[in-house]
Image 1 (cartoon, rainbow, N blue to C red):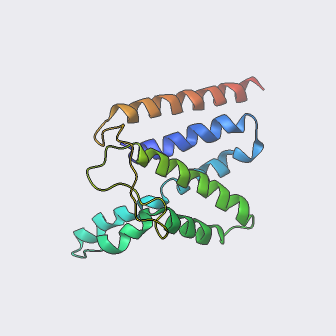
Image 2 (cartoon, rainbow, N blue to C red):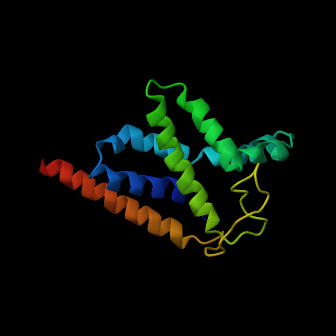
Length: 156
């Protein structure tokens, strides 16, 4: 934890709950926020490149920094007409990703939240990285939120 299921599930839950009050969190925009929650894990491409004999971990680690992730989100948002809205939704996903990663009991150093300004790492040591219960809870709550939205749609 938090694996991709938790990252995507938490953003889905947040966006679907916010959709009750704010129409901007419709299904396509929820998908954008979910994509934003995976941007920092571009670093996981290191596993794929390692399979082909390329060690790119040192080059890909930069994507797990908040500043770099914000830049990637900004570049990605350039492909859309409503750039500010897309960037905001991707940033919502990024923020949830880093908040969830801060909760981990880190074996390494932690997250460089304020990287170019400060080299201090942060982690709160609350959740074990191999905890599968959080994934099951997140999937259950996401399914309940989905079912409630579907039921509400049928009632209209």
